[in-house]
Image (cartoon, rainbow, N blue to C red; front, top):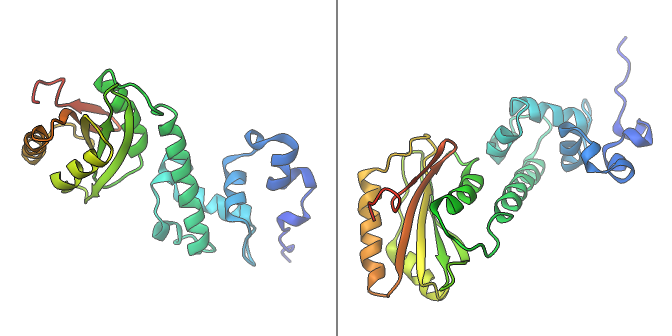
Length: 230
C-alpha cells in the first residue's frame, strides 16, 4: 500500500522553502524550491515543490527556457492554474528587467555594443519580433526605452508618427531604433531598411537624429550605423 504523500508543512522547518529563505538566505534554495515559493500551494496529489519540478521539466530544466513560456503553456502542467502561471510569468519578467536595467540606468551611449548588450538581455526570451526605440537627451543618456509594437516571428510594424510624438514628449534630441530577430538571423530585411530611412527622413524635420538601428538576436547584433547604412 502506498504511503500518503507528505506535504511541505510536514517537513522539517529548515527544509521548507519559505523558512529556508529566512534561515539560510534565498541563494541556498534550488531552482525548484524558489519556484515552489511562487506557486505557493499544491494540489491533492502534489505539493508545491512537486508542481515546481513539473514546471521545470516542461522548461527542460532550463531557466532561460522557463522565461520563454507564456501563461497558456504553463497551464499545461496539471495543478498550475491561471493565477500560478501569471505569478511565474511576472517573476520571470521582473528578473529580466532587473538584469537589463542594471546595465542601462541613465547610461551614456558611446557605441552600438552599449545598446546591443542591453537589448540582448531585454529581448532574449521573446519568440516574436518586438520593435522599440531608445530616446536620448543632449548628453547621449537614455531618457527612456519604449516598446512601439510587437509582431509575429517574421516581422512587426512601427509607426513613425508614434515614434516621433514620443520623442517630442521625452524632449529627445536623438533616437536609436531597435528590434529583435527571433529566428537568429542578423541580416536586415528590405522592409527594415525602408522603415529606417522613412523614420530618419521624418525625424530630420524635427531636428531629431536617428543614431542607429540595431537588430539583435541571441547570437549577436547588427548595427546600421556601423555598417554605414544610415
